[in-house]
Image 1 (cartoon, rainbow, N blue to C red):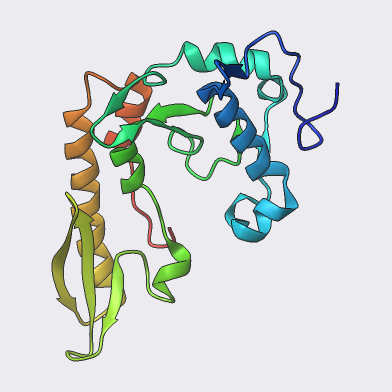
Image 2 (image 1 turned 120 degrees about the vertical axis):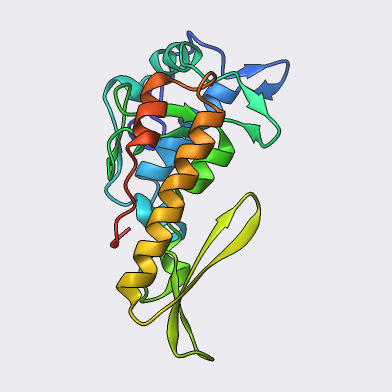
Length: 197
């Protein structure tokens, strides 16, 4: 039995395919290992360099059983299947494991994406507005880019973004409160947007 990406063990006690189709559990497990241990993947997604998978999660049978016990794993909503998140409970976490991973509705998970490479030198939620020669704060909410004002400093623009974004995250979390893991709800209510995000 060979190792998957040099670390993963598929002992074949849990199905990887059903009716000729790869299972969701196996896709999640394989993608998690690839993000952490594939040099090709690191070239495309360098933010995963330094991430690792816990010893127990390296075993597909364990991961399969764990996933099926999690709130949200089998849930779907208008935005599609829920996603496994490794750093909501522990901000900045680099280890995929049973104490750090949770399932989150896709629309909630998208609220937490940083997009650092696309924003340039400004803080998150801030851009330089050439016409006014001021810093503009914007935030995407409900599929629409919201204008939050122009400010003389990037820091002031960031704080406008921070307040709006944290309130948005809390609002959407409350909409899903009865469907999500209580740990996810608590983490979202306490989520802090930082200037270096």
